[in-house]
Structure formats: C-alpha cells, structure tokens
Image (cartoon, rainbow over all chains, first blue to last red; front, side, top):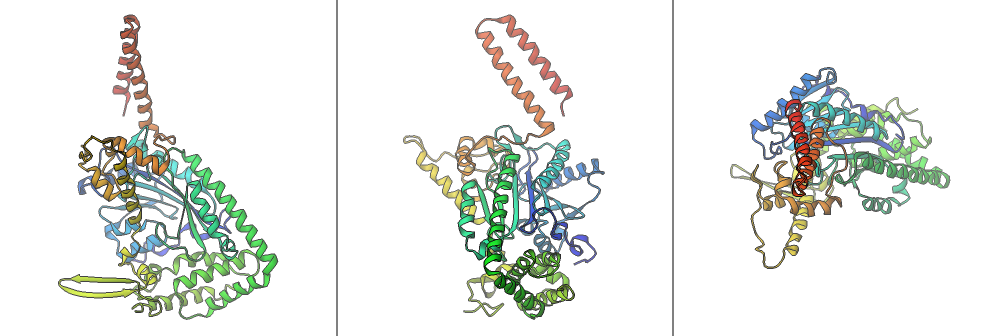
Length: 353
Length: 174
C-alpha cells in the first residue's frame, strides 16, 4: 500500500476530538443519498451506466473547480483491500462499499471531513463528518454540496416521494444524520439499556461504532434517524439534536453522581486503565476500547491528567487495517494484539503527566 | 472448540471454503471473524433489514380482496425488476420502480416512515420545473371545468396562459 496517499498517511479531521460537547459527542455525521434520473441504481446498472455517473460527477467537479479544489478522486478498484478497510475504519467509505467496488469512486476532501461516494448503494452519497456536536454545520455543508451537484445533474426526484433511493428506507429526504456518543456514565449506572430502548420510540436507531449490525464496544454508540420520508431535513436534525442534548445532560448527571459517590473508584478505574495500556504487551481491540473509555472518563472528569487527543486517535489507529497498514504487512489476530499494545505504549510515553 | 485465531474464545463461526476442489475449514469466534476482513458474512449488514421487508411485503397477502387473482406479476417497465424480486432483494431497481410499484409501495412506505409524502428539500433547478408542472396541471383542470360550464371565453384565456407557460419551459428550461 502506498504510504504517500494522504488517506493512508494522515488522520482525519474528525479524530481531533474538538467541537461543542466533545466530552460526550465524538462526531456528527450527515449523509445525503441522491440518484440520477433514468439510470438504474448501481447494483442493476451496466458498466457503461455507472461510468456515465462517474463522468457526470466528474463534469460537475470540472465546472466548479473552486468549490472542489481540495478534493481528490479515488477509484476503489485501484485500492488494495487493506486500504479500503482502512477507509472504512476512518468512516470515509461504508463497509458495504469496501466489498462491492465495481465502478465505485470516492471524492474525498483532503481533511476527510467530506467524502462523496459514487456508485455505492445509490449513485451519489454526500457525507459530511464533523467532530463534536455540529449537526447543523454538517447539514449546511452537505446541503451546499448537494446544490452544486444538482446545478449540473438531473436528480431522480418526485414531488410526492422526494429524492428516490435504491432502498425505500432512505427515500424522501435521503438524509441519514448520526452522532457517535461516548456514554460511560450511563453504562456504569446501568441506565443505558432503558434509555436506548426509549430512543426507538422517537424514530431513532442505535448501532455500534461501525454502523448496522456492529456491536457496541468501548461505551460508544451511534444514534441516527430512522425516518426519512414525511419530515423535513430540519425537523429530522432538530429531533436528533434535542435527543442528543438530553442524552448529554443525563450522561453528565450520571458522571456527576458517580463523582460525588465514588470518586476514588473512578480515579482507580482510570488509573488502572492507564497502567494496563502503558504496560501491556498483548491487547485485544475490545479490551483496548474498554480501557480507553475508562481512561477518557477519568480525563473528562479531571481525575487524571492525559492528552485526550491521543485517546481519540487511538480509537481508529488500533483497528486491524490501521495496524496492518502501519506494519506494512498482513497480521493474524495474535500479531495484531501485540502490535496494538506496542502502538499504545509508544503513544503513551511522555503523554501521562 | 476454541477459536483458531485467538485460542481464547469458543468458536461460533464455522467457515468451509472450497477452492478448486480443495476444502478448508476455519473455526473462529465472533470477534476474530469480524476482525478478519475476508469473513465479511460474519456481519452482513444489510441482511436483517431485507428479511424484515420480506415479512412486511408478505403481509400484503392478507389485504388482497377475495375473488381477485392474487399473483399478478408487477414489473417495472424501465428496469424490468419485478415486485417479487424487490421483496427478496429489498432494493428497487431504478427511480421508475417507485411509479411502477405504486400503491403496493405506499403501504410499505407507510409502515417504514409512517408517511408517503415528502415535505423536505426540493431541488433548486429541477424543482422549479415541478412547480411549473403543478401550475400547468391546475390550469388544465380549470380549463376543462370552464369548457364543461360552456364559459368558452374564459377557457380560451386559460388556454393562452397554458401555451405561454409551455413555451417558457421549453425555451428557458434546462
């Protein structure tokens, strides 16, 4: 894998761990699904048709050089499978896209905050990924890019059904808004299941770190809207924002209660996590995620002094494809656990004060 | 049986691969299976939702009125996808499918979204055409009504307006 490509070499902007409410909300993501009129959706389209979609998008980019000056086209078929996996771990492309690469491209902004997937499940998917709670900002940018695309492309749009998508679960606005949240307080105080099951009643879905079907590890959940038809984009965003604000409040209350009642226990937990992570030689990703969560909680509550940026980076860089890319070779599970422990130790040297 | 990768967890994912008549068996735990990129079936993300669809679509069977043949083949004229295929794949073939599967799709949309009508963003460029289209439809209706009421002068006035609008969209559009 070529190490000089920025999407292999660099860390994404969202990993900086900045932005409003970043102690609880890791990232805000807005994704718009769009299709071109009269061309079958990618899985049914011929090579000529998917090529046409790419050419069309390419033409838009050519016509709007200023707006797209920081973007690069990447052809998925030209990526090695490890490189694609790396992009999945960075949330640049979807897991599904990494599997089915036929004529797919990603148009990626250099800071990786915007990625436009071409010929994924839909012809075009515009994704904006911001650190912290910035749904409005992510939506405004996605909306702007959507307008630029639409100025040169004929979208499949119907006044009753809205934007037409391959899967009927996306039709209408075609919007999926999601937040990645770190909720250790609610997990420790055993409120999490009650709260998360209540979310499904307000039209929201809870998933693991890597989307549909992935498990919740390291106390990180992904919350997104289920309904895309019948509500406007603003309503959908406001709904998720309101729920997020409540979740943040509950999480902070839980943390405060924990701090009042069992300060030493929390400090002990964070200290042990730091101890293990600084010294372990073999660490599974699940264990690492849990320990990083414990450590982050201690840092957020001021019980331990540590650079939380390092924790943010590690959430992604300890994933299998990142480790293998770093070592520049394939690793089995045991080798990855060793390599992961080494990486964490190296990052921790000099960071704990 | 323990997982062959980590030798710690019980193996719950059993994979049999046959490549060129050579058979290999792999036994992994959930964790290792999902970490190993090539064993993607271990967390096939789209699978459950499509099953869910199939259930929703089968449910339509109850709503078919007695006396009407149940299995008429509904097919999209543009891409050729049949409704039966859609209910298996869970994805539509092209944007025309939304028209082709009409009412059947509406009941599905109602179940998924609780609504069948888009109220959000309208594309700026093609959206203006939609507005004009709506206006034209309304004018044609008005004209028919005037003709029926034998108010021919009024009808002619509306006809001229329609022609003007049509000329505008043909000349200035796209």
